[in-house]
Figure 1 (cartoon, rainbow, N blue to C red):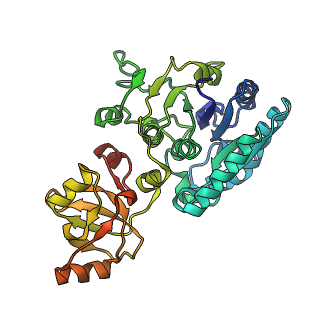
Figure 2: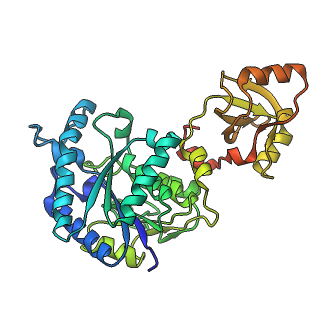
Figure 3: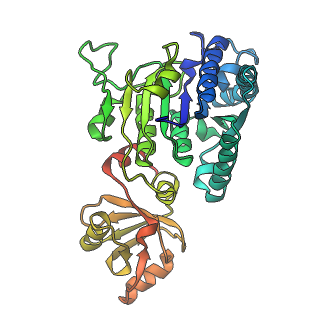
Length: 369
């Protein structure tokens, strides 16, 4: 079995009618495919949008709401209705499903990250299918564009999945907009996500969903950097999920990086929030970015903010002004300033095990570091 553990992400447009309401027939089709794959021995996780779509009609809205509070209220109603659809259909095949609601804080906080990982591991080992969504009803930030694309990649990295499948209303990444550019071609295999790929992904998604292709490239970056390949394909095909598990031929396949980031490095790269900034000289910049060395106190030339011991800070090259990455400091800002003033800067400020270099592509996609 090539892909034993698979994370599927299903977007709103793959679950709804044209008016934005939940399509029970589409949900049923998804659960039938999940059941077949489960019975074939795959370990499955479903990251599902659709809570707002399932709930807004019950609250008397004539169409999908646009105000944050209305979305949150609709999601609060819709989460239960959506899960009921999945649960009922899966139980017909004697398959247990489980709901997990996550927020970005569950990835930022290491203790909560570990708890979520342990819960998912037990569920998978017990043959259940976790159904995951963002906790949209209480967290405003989680209603931003691309929330579940990113979430699915974070989950795939967390459980070290063999494949992440992003099902959407298009069949992959194109060189241009296929709706307006007849010469646009689908990219079937992407070895590395660079600036050219990011530029190709610009543009908005469908009116019912919250994610465009750019958010899927962001998700693909998280997953592939963590060692998980990604496949973007159309949900419009009758057996799209089964085909994705057996062959990745009718979409865009993103190759996983051979040396996937360990859990600590994933956390530093994508989740850890920077509490300050420091600037380093040319020698320190080269040691960090080119030679995999630790950052020595002697290489620091300037300090900003009032970060504390153990905080994560962003490191900049003083000469070029470019950010190099981020890491955990072994000295707070006030102590570091005292050391710099005394001109007795010796020892390590950031150990290489607590450091992650940030590529220009990641900088384009992830502004919070």
